[in-house]
Length: 169
Image (cartoon, rainbow, N blue to C red):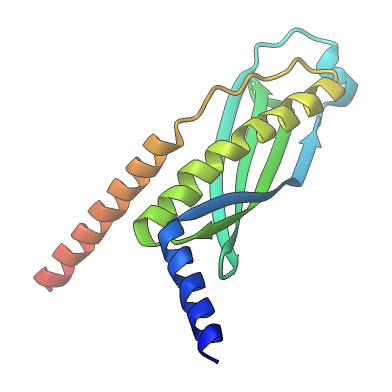
């Protein structure tokens, strides 16, 4: 009985000593949509494309130490008001995260995981466009650290604003 207690205590101490743990369990393409509303007409004329890119991330806790993070990129390319093509990719991953909580966990999910997913999303977009007979779209690197800091600042400002309104009523 004492040996079992010692073994359990040693295991707990080793886990604490090991500190935070982060690992990629799986990366996968969760959703892909590609549309060319003009069909063959898009290839029959010269166009000056205007590119609009939207980006979002979301995370979900799957179990005690597993999180799914999904990076969604939507690219719409138009010639004046006509859509040439629309592509939407949701690249996801399962990540094992232990010993990280609160603000630090939010940063790992929104910065570290998203940064790891971006090259896969970019490749899915480029290969789909090539198969659609369009030139690859070189999506530039994205500074998720800066985006996260900006989002945190906006949240803090909104909370301060709502507290100020609550105090004035």
